[in-house]
Amino acid sequence: MDKNVNFRMHEGTFMVIEANAKKNHQTVSDWLRHAVEEQIKRTVNDRALDRIDECVYDLTKSNKTIIEKLEKLQREFERLEIAE
Image (tube, rainbow, N blue to C red; front, side, top):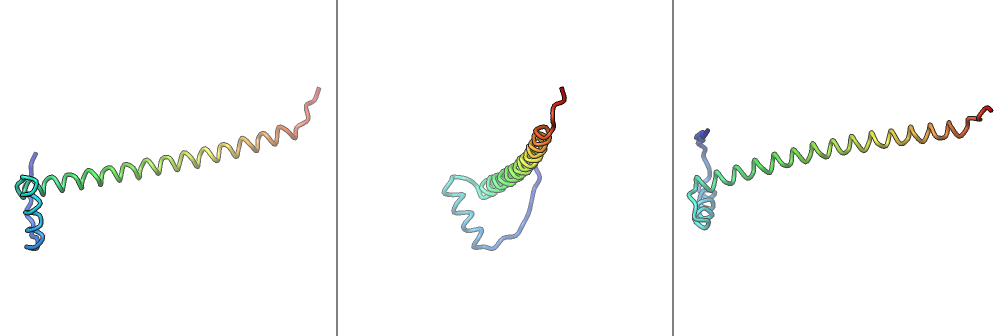
């Protein structure tokens, strides 16, 4: 589904966009559409990477906690005397 968007921009900015569009054999609308789509993809990818980083941090933290508890258990077992 396509939506139309209108916005104002400085004439100098428009001239730069127009030059880039011509260089790439595109219309200004196509160039802007592509630029916006690419920015959205980067933003979504950055958010996904942030979520992955959070998950990895949580897993690392949990793993560290488990290892500490296992080491504590191992020390406790070493202190126990085996009754025969």
